[in-house]
Amino acid sequence: MAQYYIAHRLFAAHDRALAATLAHRLAEEHGPGSVFLPFCDTDEENLIAETKGRLLFELDTQCLEGITAMAAILHGPSLDDGVCMEIGHAAARGIPVIALTSDFLTYGPTPDDPAHCPFPDPLLTAATSAVIRTHRLGAAPLPASPTYTDFLTQNLATIDDLIDQTVRATHRLPRPPTPFPTLNNQRRIAYVEPSPYGLDDQIHDAVDMLRETGWDIHLADRFNDGEAVSERAEADWAALADSHIAVVDVRGPETPPGAAMVIGACAATGRPVYAPDPRCWWTFADGREPNYRNLMIQYGLTATFDRPQDVPVLVAAR
Image (cartoon, rainbow, N blue to C red; front, side, top):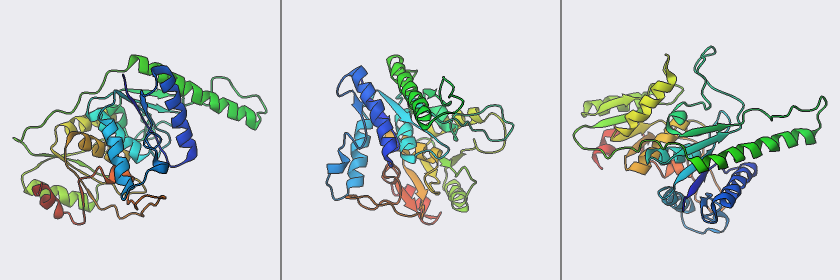
C-alpha cells in the first residue's frame, strides 16, 4: 500500500486543522493506514518520554524512510523549517514531493526579474516534483459589498480546491527526483549553505579551514547577484548530492528554508552536517525537553560548533 506523509506547520491550531483535513481526504481516497500525519499519528498529547522531542524526531524520521510520496504544505514568506527539513529528507531519497500552497505571493531576486518562484528559496522548486497553487482568493468574485460569511466561504472554497488538486495528483504521482548517490571516498567535497542574507564570518572562516585540510568546497550561490536563479538552485542541489559533508548557517528567527532542506537531505543519506550554534531563544512545550531549534533541525544536525576552527576537528572525529 502507498504511504503518504503530510509535512505541515504544527504550532497553531489552524495549521494542524488544515493538515488533518488533507490527511482525512487522502485516507478516504487511498484507504486506512495509507497516510502518516506527524504529531497526530505519534499521539504527541499522550506521549511520555524523558526526551520527548528526540523521540518524536525518531518516530517521524522512521516513517519518512518508508513513504511512497509526500504532500508538503507551504505558505507565506517565512516557511516552516521542519517542513523544509522533511522535504529535503524525502527528495534526497528519490521520493516525489507534492508542495501545495495558497500563498498569493511569488518571489524573485530583483524587482524586475521575470522568473518568479512560488517560494522564497528556489531550492524548494529544484527538489520538489510538483507545485500545486491556488494563489487567488477564489474562482467566483465576491459580491460588491461582501460579508464576512462571503469572505469565509470563498477562502474555504480555495482550501477545498487545493486539497482536491492534491488528492488528484496522488493518483498520477509526478516523476520522482533523482536519489542522492552512494559516495566514494576518493574525493572530499564539502557543501556550504550560507545564510540567504549574506556570508557570515564564522561560515567564511570554516570554509577556509576546510580548504586548508584538503576539502573541495561548493559554496551555494543561488542568492548571489546574477541571472538563471532556478538553474543555479538546481546546480546547488546537484552539488549537495555529490558532497560528503555539509556546513549550514541555521541562524535567524528560524532556520532558513535551504539550510533546513540540506539538513534533511544529509540526515536521510548519512552525510554529516554541521552548523554554528544558532544562539537563539529556546522553545518550551508541555511534556517536552527544551529545544534550541525545531526538533527536526536540532536532532537532524550532526553537531554544532562555537568556533570555525572546531569544524575540521569535528569532521576528523567521525
